[in-house]
Amino acid sequence: MFKKINRQKALGLYPKFPQSNNLTEEFIYPKVCTNFILSLQAKSAKGHAKALSKEMKKLCNILNISSLLFLGDTKTAWLYQENDYKPAKDAYDFLIENNISKRFNGGVKVDMENLETFLYHFIWLTRSNASLPYFYFSNENQSFLGHICQYGNLHIDILDYKVEEEFNKAISKTNFEYFKEVHCYSQFSSFSRIPGRRIVV
Image (cartoon, rainbow, N blue to C red):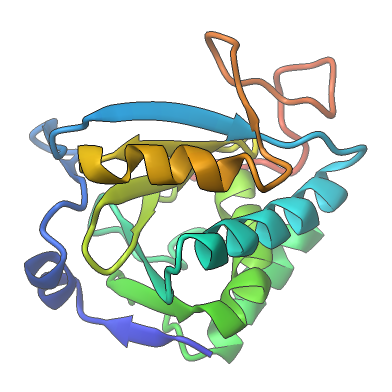
């Protein structure tokens, strides 16, 4: 399904990934050329997760990206938090079934063939579990960083000016819309609380 990479090795191969230390409040982030937020319209969170997974794969294919590497910004394990909310539990079980151990905190490299399925579960994992790291993803040469927030918006940081125009052209061929609000919010609820979202206390 996908390839696991030891955390230190992943940071050595892909040095532009953000790193955060909760104890020292140190935060390392690469220089950003430009950034934007992309959103999708959907009638439900489940429909949104499906659509986001599909459109992200489409965007990667247009950009000729063959794989994405996902890595958390802290040393916290992918499966640090358990959650009985069904979509979150399904995501947890999906990773277990694909050989992600409960202590694994490294990178996960996903090819295009498996990206849509992986993303669907990944979206629920990060949407529902507030105690997990911020997971970022990038392409092989790290020309950009991506992050999906708990509200389901796709945050893109361009790290190389040469690809900015290419990105904008590719986005115009998808169903993504540029998010113009100041702050992200849930489009499926009139409350700020996200159903099923838990935190470890």
